[in-house]
Image (tube, rainbow, N blue to C red):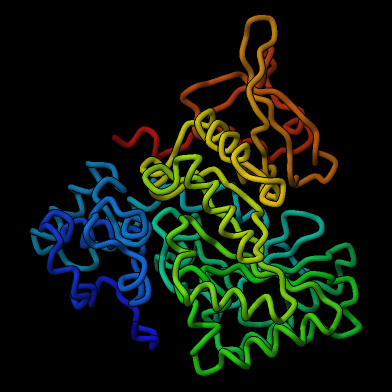
Length: 445
């Protein structure tokens, strides 16, 4: 394995040696879908994680490379026809942006999480839950690979009006000083660990001072462990990064790496095992999360193996998410009932040390809603739900019911039980209209 980072995108993906063995239709799909949904991967993924003898069905290939089924047929054919006809880049761009708007690029009304400082809107910050602030440093608005299911895909699409980022850290610090109830800061993106260590230090080090005593936990959301563990091993500033992790922990802050692992293969290499050990050696925690994805990890045995491997490596299983209602969701989505059954069966196959994971959870406008199960009352079935996090903290842990729907794949397809018009929290928040907005991509075929 060449430990020097080498990225691939639409302009150079054919330089990957294994690409020559792909079928013409697979190459066409990369060219067409990759123009709509951002495409990027790297040499670690292509050399150590993908099984090229199982293309196109290999799960890591599917996570990284565009496939035809990720776009509705009419949109796929529309882009393909424009490419074949030699349409201008301007015509292509306008058409592609129109298609992107049909893919719900702003799930759960994320723009409503953007706070203000005085009269200034802080487009690089989201503050949805009282205790936690998300920060999008402009230097970290890329990833080692662009996951085709990711709800942050508009960040990398060139649609500037849908991008969250902030270069001015001073405004971030000023905002935090006005919010004494905030205890957690999550650096996200993109991937903050694509930044140099020194840039990361510039963003984080001020938080270690006395004026930010209320900030107890610093989180880094990253796919680096799964897709570029050499960030912690052989990158030129890897040692410097680990030393800084130690400094954060010694300052009295809790440092948590929010690691994204979607499949056990991502935990199989010696590189990732060594990287995890180095991070844990600094005193930092590693909490893991992933959506439940059809064609990738839609079997309880896969999840049970994933959680056991994580615990064996001293990571903490944290979240199982339902695939967000955006992008290529209809390729990855599963009925909510199946999500719950997979979670339940996987949960029953592991010991208590693995049962720290919470899910299946839907990140909606109102908050993170967990599917607790299915119950029957007066011969009628209902979903039992509760808030793990709420836009209103008073909603947290409150159980409620929704009418059973075997076809539902997202919360906005559910209705309140017993003929009620609204869920209890919809009465409290005028933003509930975002919960009931029809998922536009469901009717595209």
